[in-house]
Image 1 (tube, rainbow, N blue to C red):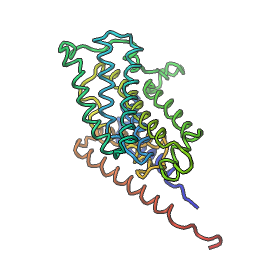
Image 2 (cartoon, rainbow, N blue to C red):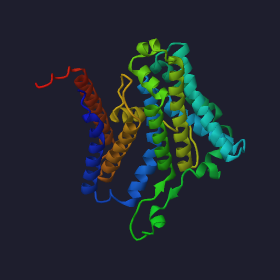
Image 3 (tube, helix red, strand yellow):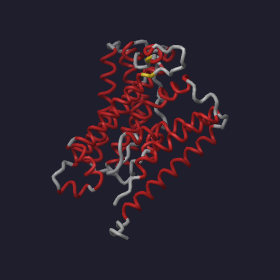
Length: 336
């Protein structure tokens, strides 16, 4: 019988870690800090969910950070240079990001490139395009101009739960729109993977591509959709971050691919593909957020935080390997 301790271990570990910092760091469990945690890591969780689609297919998407920069700059240019309405700027940024993901899939499917090589190449290409279309470079005066379109900056909205419930006297954290959007995407992606034929085909493709092909599953379509969803998630995250910053820079999303991969692996998405969920990377992201914010409030230097983050990632990979080895062990006979 397959044991599933790993499924419940992550949320339990998250709650224990959260409780530890609440007890040790007095300023940790404040409404302002919880708001910062939700707003600061919701967009990372969205990128991690997109990255998980690639990993579930035995691949990886190293271009998500560059796609974020590309989508952010498209929204910036469309709003401040082309003066498009905000809803068109948002839609255009999402279309460009999704198409960038599709292009990754096309390179993998039709040119038969390894996902690592294909997305490493597009990472460089997309970064180059960002600099080529940078409104901050083309129109230097825009480097100090903030975005003010309500369709874009409106994404940085907070809902005052305390006022809604009539408990203003209690410090209740406001809920960022970005966090609610992350929850909506999480539910949609979980339903897509768990309750549809595409989800079953997706896991089958990641688990055993040859068996999936023999079963009549269109592997090319599955891979293209997977990488398209990765690009789409990067585009959504870019818009949330641009709304928070009220601008977009050429360095937007730098290093985001490594954080997203770490969150996905910590969340139980198997690097060999075919096993994992969408909620795991979300919990993994906020686990990283709790650790990093807790260490910052505790006065731990950033260099030590990076070391501890690497240690957490190594521990997650080791745990995943251990669970995989347990699954490969034969079940004990009844009555033994």
